[in-house]
Image (cartoon, rainbow, N blue to C red; front, side, top):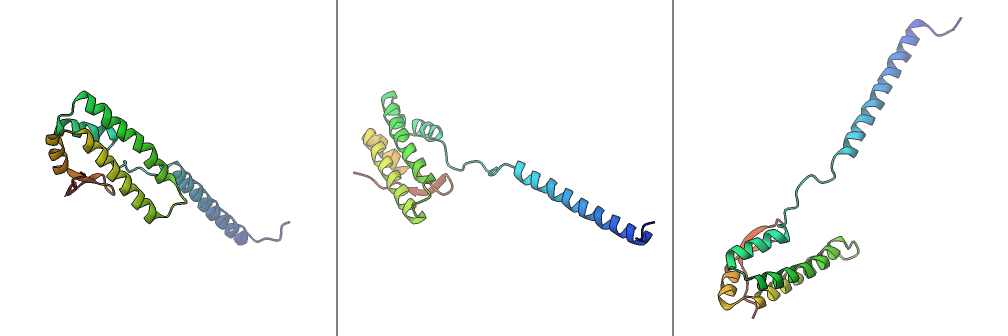
Length: 143
């Protein structure tokens, strides 16, 4: 017969069961982590459509102005996305470049507006690029 005692067999079975439960728990938790969305927070930045809608409401844009501003926003969006995804540019340099792009967008949009619309535009709060909400500050005039 076998030389292993009954108590040794029970001990091995209990240890084996514990290891099996531990491994099963690890597999389940790994699957939960992998199945979870990587980033379940919504993008805090307002969409270009939301920004356009806000400007239309606040400034009373004409159809021609809407088209011009939409073109300005679309041309810059691709550049900004490329910069966001660029992993070779240092973070501080990215921030400076993004700010320069935002300033250029503001200047270009302002050039499309009438003097009355420019005054309203300048009084509108600037969006906070870190949170997608107005920061409370007003735009500097870009003459």
